[in-house]
Length: 165
Image (tube, rainbow, N blue to C red):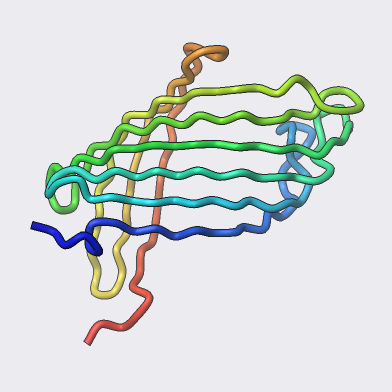
C-alpha cells in the first residue's frame, strides 16, 4: 500500500491578477488584484484521488459594462474526486461553491452565491519529459442559476521540477 507522504500533496499559492478582459462584454473584469489559494490532494485508494481547493481573491477597480467600478472580493471552496479508470484515462466529479461580489451601479451589487457540479474526463499523453493532459468538463449550476450549462475544455502541460537520474 501507499506510504502517508506519498498519499498527500499540497501547493499553496499567491497569484497576481493582471487587469485584462473586455469590460464592454465581460463584467467584473479590468482591475488588478491578488488571489490566495490552498489546494491539497489525497490518494484515497489505488483508483480514487481527492482534490480540495479553498481560496479568496480581491480585485481592485473592476468594471461593469456601463463603466462603473468597485473593489470585488471572492471566496470559494472546491472538491473533486478522480477515478483512475486507466493509468492515463480518468473520470472526474467536481463541485465548486463560491461567494462573489459584482459591480452594480456606482458600488457593489448584491453578493452572489453559486454552486456548480461538473462531471468530466481527462486523458494524459506521456512524452519523454512532459505530460500533456486533455480534459473536458460539463459544469451545471445548481440553485440561483439552475439549469445553466456549459462545456469546459482543459489543457495542461506537466513537467518535473527536478531532473530524474
